[in-house]
Length: 332
Image (cartoon, rainbow, N blue to C red; front, side, top):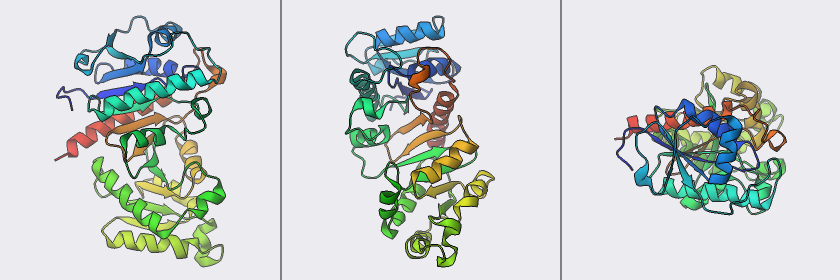
């Protein structure tokens, strides 16, 4: 990793037909004094969006290698080679998906080589990239060849880790086993320790109403989740539950727990987006570098109108910086 003092934060531009580059260019001026921002983009789409948001006065520099990333307060630009024609705003297309995937791959290469400390990923369209593309989390994990990874959401007051992600509810519940939860609880504990959180308090959310009410409304908590909690706790993890989900997320929000493990996507994401809409950040656990992303999509319907709110991107960049600094402080 480079020895320069400022954290180096890479940003992939996302789908060029969406708002990713717009919110990025609105957000990065707030951070240029304190971190080195490296944007993975191409000249045609960068200049179009730069004019849209009125960013001509912000200093930028196109670079050909990581050796050109200095401590100067400017935005460093990496030209991700590809077709030069502009992709229309607001239109999902294979061309746009290919550009988005290329930006993401280039950022991944820099991070894996140790040239940047973190990646912040602007939103992409899964359908534009292709049927085999499950998401940026899976894409980056595959390129990093990591065996275990998880999607987490960090809010200003609590964190949520998803035990299952993009599955039907039936498939998600069928995939939950005691062994899987033991592995996940231990993994979450290790990852938060690695990120500099000492003794994270992990809470397991129940699956059924009132966490099954002692078996009255289902036995998954008794037969699957409770044994996992007991095994993990016996190995020194600070974990409890399963807790009734209808009150657990508020308990975490008010400080009783640091991390909630949710059994399926919408149970975990609904309270996150209600309590911290626009300020929560998607964080990938398990990668050899920090990766964050805003909690919104491409918003094709408003792309190119210069009305997109950069709040989510600001939160994602700030979260990446804080995690890099936290990890640095606690690295032996």
